[in-house]
Length: 149
Image 1 (cartoon, helix red, strand yellow):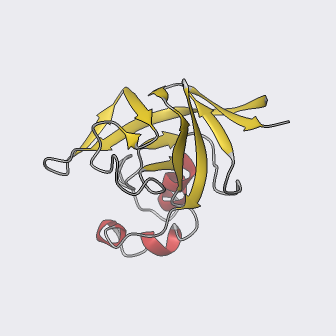
Image 2 (image 1 turned 60 degrees about the horizontal axis):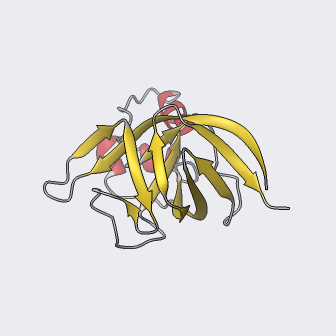
């Protein structure tokens, strides 16, 4: 298996099951059911981990809209844009390996940030991944694209 370093993790977030609060984390533990301690853990496995590129925030910012990191609902904010990668692409992040399973669709709550945001991020909000190999993901971890031979 070959790998290519493409970027790093900028920030990590979970949403608490108790009060729906978004919390910034320095490290996350992931397994086949998602992110431990996150409200989506063990639910829809193809939608339990959202990876968003910093490019999404830059795209919105170009239109004069400033939103705080984490506001797009991402669990992992990265400095690499994975949106054009095909479903099935494997990525190593920290000690875990994840696989892209689908693009993220728009959520109604994004229009509460600004009415333009859903249209601006129609194809640029993020990708959902599921866990192939459990492990730990930390801020500043490298992102490696994996290529099976």
